[in-house]
Amino acid sequence: MELAARTPNTPAETSRDAQAAVGSNQPTGATAIAPFDRRVIAVGAVVFAVLLAVSTRYGFHRDELYFMECARHLQASYVDQPVLTPLLAWVSLKLFGVSLLGLRMWPALAAWATVVVAGLTAREFGGDRRAQLLTALATGTMPAVLGADHLFGPTAFDILAWASLALIVVRIGRTGDTRWWLAGGLVLGLGLANKHSVGFFALALFAGVLVSGGRRDVLNRWFLAGAAIAAAFTIPDIWWQAQHQWATIAMTRALAEENGGAANIASWVIGQLLMTALVLVVVWVAGLRFLWRSGRPLWRALAWAYAILFVFFALTTGGKIYYLAGAYPFLLAAGAVALDARFAARKRLRRLVVATAVCTALALPLVLPVLPAGDVGWTQKVNPVLAESVGWPQLVSTVRTVWFSLPARKRANAVIFTSNYGEASAINILGQGTGLPEAVSGHNTYWWWGPGNRYATTVVAVMPGPKDGGGDAAYLGQFFTSVRAVATLSNPYGLQNQEWHGHVYLCTGPRHPWGQMWPQLRQYS
Image (cartoon, rainbow, N blue to C red):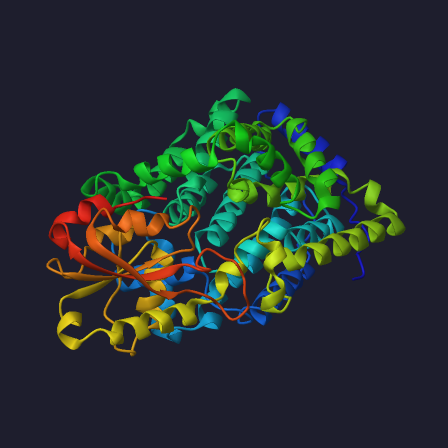
């Protein structure tokens, strides 16, 4: 892609002008910035097209099936996330039905928007057309963006929320126009209606502003109005949590126990190097340095926020390396502006673009379904998502065979119970029209939807692949006098995912009434 020549205003000149305005205690709105490079939109469109092109190669991921099931039980909030993602799933179901392409159009659009927002952020930092384009290319090739925005889920929209909030912060820092906090409150509110992690970003930003001496930027009526707007979006979530024993807090503690601690710190640190193309680490590190040395409290607050959350997530949820992915678009934007003069030599810039393309090509099999489904087994240790996107129709078929092998009188007093929401959602979404009843589960929000027939005497239990030699049968034996494996789960590709070699059990002789045992079956993860 041909790269444009620089505009007359260099980032250094823009920075000097802005610092002079700050020093005179005047708003910096007069600071000149380069025109927006429309090729940034084209880069986002290419990312969108690529994501749609590969969207139907495998099947639904367990989380996508769950979000569609949440959409069928639309409510104010859920154990795992607030309402926005299920609401978008509801819209998708109304428009397209149960469609991979229709569902995954939304995160692909989010990827496009994220690329554009990153390019706009580079412009606000004082970047010319070349810096904007480089930012767009760097963001559009992020493995974290490609992987997250391939699937329908909160992470795709969370990355966009972080990037959009950062864009507004950067603009306020450049112009001094605090009226933009109203837009910031709207972005934050929508982000909080999707996922809570953007709230941590906002709190870390606020702390960073105070530490950086920017109290005047946040202690004003516009900031308070923006905060009120954001808070209004959280009311349905808080109301639901209060009615459901603050379930998300309990789930968060369970996730922290599983993914936090010193054992996962090394994985977290290495994981941050893989959020962008590896060759671009030097760019976002330069972006951190640029923010820190900018002389602007709001810009420096972005560096503080990254540092605070880097440590916080490393200690609490280190195994979830993507929790900080939303920070890299603004870091790449800052780095592209900071290094723009070095990239002025066309050969140097072209070498960087080629290296980025090579790194992206090497990462693609780990984040997108570009290989035949049977060839992705080796990727599971790095990214299990792709392997978890196959085998669901076969699971439904196996359960259906077991269900209809029961006599009609037995089915009348039976329920289908699964160990996790993915299995239950596969049965309830993909099994529609097959005669199967609604499956129930004790996992996360499913538990709150109840046990189905409270007086069931027969349970068809779907359990994932055993990790400790028959532990599932022993677990079910706590609740039933008879537990018998009647089918084995598999997939046509032999991928050893979570359900591989799991079993379908026929459980009879409940030790207590099924509804009475339901509280003991709750699990959060």
